[in-house]
Amino acid sequence: MTSSLHVSLPDEMRAYVDLRTNGTQAFTTPSEYVRALIRSDMEKEAERLYVFGELLKSADDIKHGRLYSAEEVAERSQAFLDELAREDQ
Image 1 (cartoon, rainbow, N blue to C red):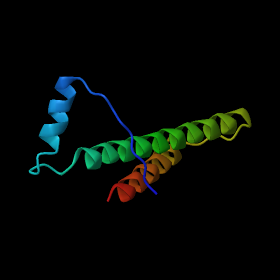
Image 2 (image 1 turned 180 degrees about the vertical axis):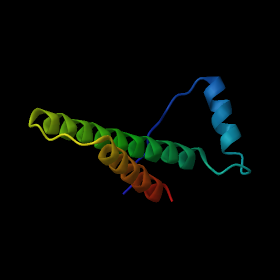
Image 3 (image 1 turned 60 degrees about the horizontal axis):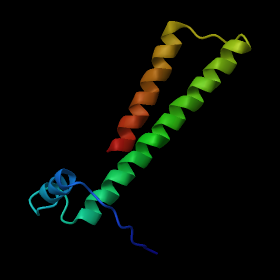
């Protein structure tokens, strides 16, 4: 199911959208461009929520005396970055 959304843009922004959707860029229509921007924002928000959740878990670990060595933290951090890189592919 799809629905329409009317958006008013200043002339400068509209010119930029037109530039990005001129057929030689990655997007052929303004709608396609806006959908890609929204998808990107949704992914970034999901990543922020994940990181926030991990911070809460870390705070809980500290509160309950579960501490990790610098090596363990580095390994966990690298695993997280590797997972993000796989998702981007």
